Length: 598
Image: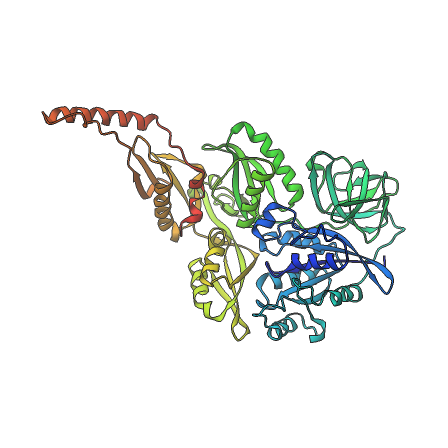
């Protein structure tokens, strides 16, 4: 075990994690020149298109120092706040972390958040300043920020350029000397914790784990402790660019196991693997259950694809443990699933992956958050409201509480006014303001999660010209005055368009929602009344006029009563059509709420 080093790379989004991983693999000759390409570990089309890491990726590298071979297990992690669960799982499989800070941008919100995660797990931190070759790099100021943040010495900070390869050999040497080797007992019963898994259509589920104690051999009978099921280790091995089968993995190793499991429910991230012959008495502590922040309904366009959608979501959850879902029905959309996500980008990525990887065309309803509701009859018993259709009758409701978050925003001092007015507009309360440098400010706000779910992040980027970074964590629930706004089309409520909104904003949002739907719903042969209502009270209305044929075109002059008779006949037909006609709602109308500020 003294020859192994397990470490991950953590940083804010777009600070050069994946590029640094490319250079480390290149210098250690883990990949040949023919296989080398940019962001090599980002193997999803979606990751390469958007230029972001969505999944953690593990790879083993060989490093030789003073003629002595060493094994480095590297895990490249995402930087966006919506994928922080991936980061927390990766951190728990490591002894050290490379904390990367962009020499041009300095410390950002997610840098601080990820650093605290690593410190919580008692990891050895190696601070790295990346992109020192940029003309806009400011290494002296950024070094001062890092020293202030983690209390290290100036000599502890490594300066590298992942693009040109400057400083990479020194970094490899620092990893060897500063990150401790894994500790574990080779002779103890096997304990290996699963921190990721993927679905292979030909071989079943591939679980990725880290051996904490003991050893695992190929062909051995193993037991998954959470489900209590036993399997045979058909293949075990280490993760190179391609899987590299081995006969045995020892304590400290990171590897994969294939045992022909076909059912996605049988593998849980955070489960402990042990052997049947010499089982461990206790399971390793897994990962805390992630709490979804944003809820949205996902429905198949064709109702008969419901079971297919369930299978697709189960396979997707293997690869993304932070996704949660349960079946639900909607009067407008039929059978579907209520899904929980960590944020709006997470929702967008899941929807895109369903379409690309599983060929599922889905309708996504308006996203909302989870509320705590209390009835007057029993004020102490609480129930969850995750869907506007679950909202109880206000007359029996004692109070409703909504989730609040602590938002941390780091921006340039010139944008402080705009950022503050945005947060106050979103019902935020400022709790702290501190200057990191003369022109970089950290602002802290307590604000309702529901307010940041929609367009907050986009508007923050617009106000700060792309310079603000944003991070948040939940701080509990607080009582709030909320109302359920229903959307009616020709007096028919459309449950998929309902939303729970703060009372002060309900009239404004109801009015804007009606205007938006008027733009998006195609005109029909009859008049459509688009209304927003709170209970029985209509708070806004728009009228979508009918497409009309000119029935009087054939009348050239003559008696006016002839024209009137034709128009009356058309009017009766339109009235009958309105009673029988169904309004077709396009998919983009369901997400109209998100684009209210466009």
